[in-house]
Amino acid sequence: MIRLADRMNRLGTESAFEVLARAKALEAEGRSVVHLEIGEPDFDTPENVVEAGVKALREGWTHYGPAAGLPQLREAVADEMKRTRGIDVGPENVVVFPGGKPCMSYLMEALIQEGDDVIYPNPGFPIYESMIEFTGGRAVPLPLLEEKDFEFDAATVAELITPQTRLLILNSPCNPTGGVLSRDLLEAVAEIVKEKDVFVLSDEIYSRILYGEEFFSITQVPGMLERTCILDGFSKTYSMTGWRMGYGVMPVELAERITQIAINYNSCTASFSQIAGVEALTGDQTAVTKMVDAFDRRRKLIVDGLNALPGVSCRMPRGAFYVFPNIRETGLGAKELSSRLLDEAGVAVLPGTAFGAHGEGYLRLSFANSEENIEEALRRMGDFLKANA
Image 1 (cartoon, rainbow, N blue to C red):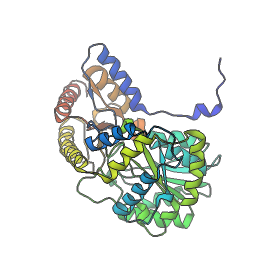
Image 2: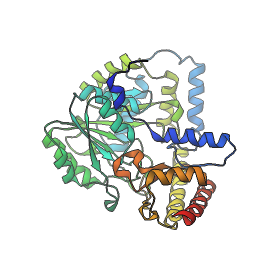
Image 3: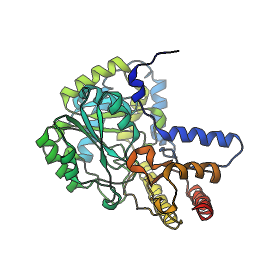
C-alpha cells in the first residue's frame, strides 16, 4: 500500500468536476441531462484570438519562455491594469501562470507558515479552503450574507483578524453567489488590513463580467497596491478555459519570489497561448461584449424562473454567470436536492455546500448555457419540486 504524506488528507476538490462526471455517465446510459453545474462559458474563444494562437504555433512559439511570462504579454497585462483599474504597475509586477489556480497556490506557499490564519469568503470557490489547509494554514471562513446581497460586514473582518492572520482572500464578482463587493466595503476593508498588516489576494477573474456597474478593485484604494496580489486571467472573459492561462499582479519583490516557485513547478506557461493572450487583451473586444450581453439576458431569465418555483427564492446576481438560489423552503438539504435533481430530473447543479458550510440551504446554477436549455432545466426543476417539495 502506498504511504501518502499527511498533507494529502487536507487536500480538497472541486465538486463541479465530480458532478460533471456523474452527469456524463448518465448521458452515456442514454439519459438527457441539462448542464448547469460547470463554471465555463459556452462560447467559443473569439476568432481573432484563435487565429493569433494558430499563427503563433506556425511561427514557432512552441519552446520555453521566461518563467514569469513573455515580455509582450506582461506589458499587455500591465497596460490592462492601468486602463481598467487606473493603477500604476509595470511588466515587472506581472507573473503569468498556466491557469489562475497556480497564482493562488504559489502565493500561499510563499506567504503562509504552518498555523497561520487565512480569511476566505464562504460560500466561496472551494480551492481557497483546500489550498489554505494543504499549505498548513488555518482556514477562517468569512460568511457572505444573502441579506446583504452576498457581501459581508467589514466589522466581521476586523473581528476575525488575529496576530496569526497572514492573508485575506477577496473575490468580486463572486463565485458562487454572483455578488459584487461595493467600493464602500472595499475601502473599509482596506483601512482594516492596512492597520493590521494583512496581505490581500484579490480574485478578480470575473472583473469583466458585470451587469450595469463599474468594476472596483481594492488595489485602487491608496496604500493597497503594495499589499495586494490581483488574480485574473483569460478563461472566463475570453472563453479560454482550455488554453490554461492566468496571471498575478503583485509587488515586485513578491513577483520575483513567485517566479522562483514557478520555475520549480511548471518552468513556464505555453508560449503560443501567451501570444494569443496578447491578442485577447489588445485586439477586438466585440466578442466579449456580445457574451456578457447574452449572459445578461440569461440571468434575468433564470432568476425569474427560479423565483416562480415552489420553495425557491433567488437574488439577481450582479456579476459572473452564476445564481445562488435559496432552497430552504423546499424542505430538502442542498446535497439531497442537487443529487435528486440530477438523478430524477436530469438537471445538473451544485449544492451550496460544495462552496463551504455557509452554502447550506442554497444551490449554485451556472447560466453559461443556452436560453432554451435554461428554460428546459427550469421546467424539469418545477415538475420535480411540485411532486417532491
